[in-house]
Image 1 (cartoon, rainbow, N blue to C red):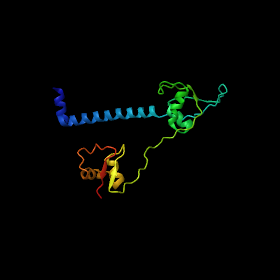
Image 2 (tube, rainbow, N blue to C red):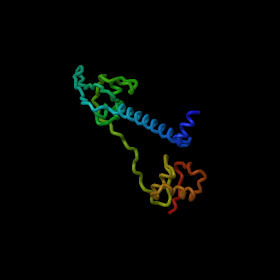
Image 3 (cartoon, rainbow, N blue to C red):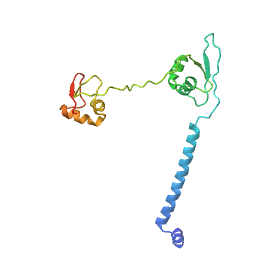
Length: 181
């Protein structure tokens, strides 16, 4: 048991040795994580390149072509060409691309002459409810009714109590609800 005698002379007990080994393991793990994250960041960044849209005349169709650069997706190309990524569908359709995730660097894509698509917001401002009753329309729920009536969705509970609703999740178009004021 030479090791035991050596440790006694160094006056290191088991807890001190465990602490030292624990610190070494944590440092080693930290270095591994740092290197992993460092590699991940390098691989995920798209190098800045001078991307240019090559304009070529194609069989009197006057369509533009685009050469895919490394790391690009159809969304990125559509953003660059049209200013809207939503036009990636038009590019895929024009080039008969079945899997839009499989485009290759150097691939020539035909760019159709279409207008840029803009994302539509469907959050229409609904009118406020001012009366003491409200007739439910298709698609309504108590939360939205409470927001429109009181400006506070949490007041749906009061509407449910006032109307003695057994199941507040179940309201039908045509129901007339009393709104406590």
